[in-house]
Image 1 (cartoon, rainbow over the protein chains, first blue to last red):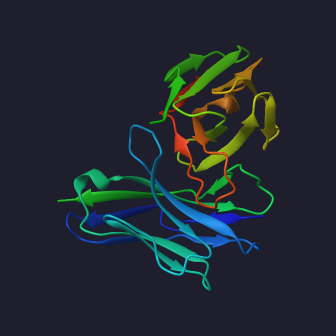
Image 2 (cartoon, rainbow over the protein chains, first blue to last red; image 1 turned 90 degrees about the vertical axis):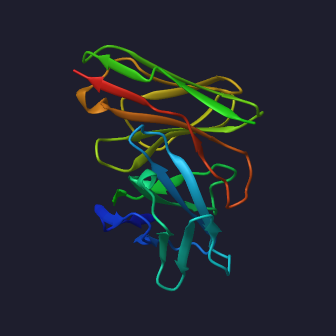
Length: 118
Length: 115
């Protein structure tokens, strides 16, 4: 069974600094996808970034980048130049492609609460 | 563009009462639809998903059921709510593709409190 581990319940970062949110995963499949979502206090889940297991380069989306280390089974999210609006819960999630058909059945971690300070 | 609507946003129900949460998607056809639940301070747990009208897959045995009466409508129901059903319920949709980059797009969520 797949599993996502986020070991940092909470993180603080100063405005304009970079921060890394940790995520490790466990799967026996060779084909899988890794996702990061942001959940502000409003509750809505906002997609940030995706990394495929066969992608050789780390994914980047604006200020977000994913530090993918396949051998270590880690997929850490790096947020550069933090802004006050980045304060939120961040969830790492994984989709195993095998056996899922067209359904995107994501397994989520427990999340990391990021607080950006002045 | 596609949009997803979910309602009601907030619901307070007594134990033993029925439940109906609705979700609709606009701007696409034959989407895959999902219901997730988030307990307080926890991650999301997949409850049900559907790849077509009348096709429901249950991931977790529980006091809830789901139905998809129309292509872009997904309903979460219960006949008798339990205290443990309290939580934040999120509907989501995705394109029906085998691609690994099959992003889930979520609705705004429904916060259910069972008293």
